[in-house]
Image (cartoon, rainbow, N blue to C red):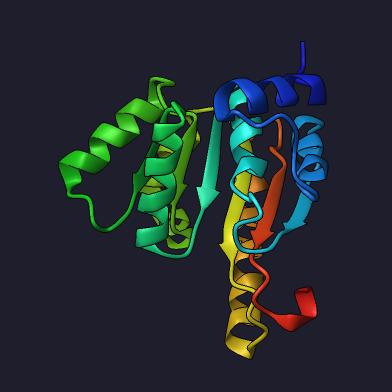
Length: 189
């Protein structure tokens, strides 16, 4: 049986203590549960992370979260763990033993949310691990949206990284993905 918005509202209440979604949160959550791609553009503090955390708990398998900065990856992982979501990260800040431990936990199904930088998708050993697990959702968290040419180009690179990953032959069924952008750019407000 597949997860529904009713299930997501129960998770939102039971896991996070909220009675309802904020404006803009429910459409990307519903899209994830329905296996569709979505773009969620929410203001800073608007609850972007719930747009992938709730589906991560409702769907089987792993949710892979691409995020720009090690400090953000570590912070989001700690927040997820405080909400009792099995989460981990892999960054250059981990030594080889720590990375192996995380990958083992991913392979054993003990992780629901895995946070990585987009560059991690270029690591063959990492891709081999992803090929051995079911990925239910790919999220791009905090895609830079400050309107500059460099940031605009970086968004394109991020989206292409996620799209490239989604179309790998070992990803079946193809997981939906969503970009969650902050709205520091006036054009997104």
